[in-house]
Image (tube, rainbow, N blue to C red; front, side):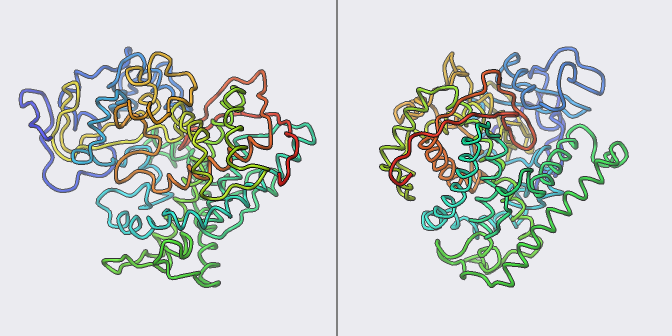
Length: 502
């Protein structure tokens, strides 16, 4: 429920009616009692809360600060004041769609030079978000998902061939690298009928290199004002321009090839055509409007980047924990053997029956949600749990990493890996809005069912075929770009005895 903001509190005037302003808005404009919100000690004039932090791990730095300061805190960097929230009660308010909406915050807005008004980066008032969402949502329905399943299996077979070769040679596998190959090929083939040839390459495909480069440059916008970047980092700015040009050129070639080949169907039924077919051929069911060529390019880039980056991280973290916990791996393997007997390939319907594998994946996403935060902005003046007042347009960054470890919800051993946290009775006993690996509300990830199906399928296939052995000297290091990924993770494999059909 909207409430009036305390008139006695020092604050900027309430914004006038109409859409909130775009771009970064410092917290002073939206939080009239900012003085009530703790921040790290020893602030440096203008630079802010920079002592002891790393530009390479801003999310994990915020995680450590949140542990010290509590469920609502603030950080200031280069004059930019940001409010973070992770307490379950506060996040429940921020996830209320009647009071809050997605905020295209600093990190996401910095991706707009790459993805424009794609589904992930569009502002709420931009018409192409709703248009694209309505056109593409059926592409993630049951019939469409069943059609993607054989293609997912085909890509998984190529991963298995690569891992078989490594196992025979006694070589460790590069888990993040191979999961990136897998998920890029999966979204490229199922969504756009394109083969990047990732498994035939010893080094990442140039698309991945350009993507990583553009994401890294986008992060730099968080600490250096964009107009100054070409002056401060001229070589990096030129490299970024080349990376974006390569991404756009690659996508344009994919679209041209599809137009030349002809669209597979009219895209008007759940199983008719892939994502690109729908973008090219489908009109909005009410308005009759279609996506422009420029927006199609932006949506394809969005799906290729987000559609493989998050899932590769989720799979990598899950495999890390399975290797560390052979008892859990054995339990998951026994389930896969039971559901898919005699080494048979799983059908689409059988993947949903792998409930323990899904719990393993969910617990990995709880500890390390690959999308580690999301932003929410107030639709009207309101009050959060704890008496925090927020003006219309004021926003907060929900630190999902800490929400998923809130001891008030997850207990004193919240940092431990325990898939049984996701037993049905345990899920029912928890409050809503405490597990948000895919964001929340109308702007939550449109492809979450696609990602979950792919990840459960691949985990089951790998566990049936291999025993996983961690490097004894490895300690989890988490790399940050747009998403989180275990850095330097390798595993050794032992091939399990062959079974009929394996």
